[in-house]
Image (cartoon, rainbow, N blue to C red; front, side):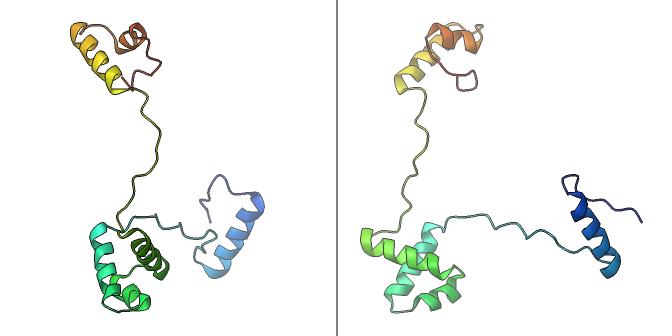
Length: 134
């Protein structure tokens, strides 16, 4: 019988896998299922949860009603009590490489010199950015 097994599997793992396959005639799962992707609870659902809790319902009841983990519901409730709102805060990220003035100057120059490659325009302006940024 021919088996197709991941190329990254070690030889003992392959042998074990083949032995299990021959014994049980099914493919056992040797790796855990992938983790679920993290996702943000929408603001509308957060507001419903807050209203539900303000009406005197418990976190467990909210968990059953909205199908959101209890720990998440507690986090939403605590954030609401502390901040007065459960809105998502802006996340930090990489600051922009170009300032608004740089962007305007770049656009103005690109319109004047339409046939000049973008990399050359960036070099003329002294911008240390890639062509994809431009």
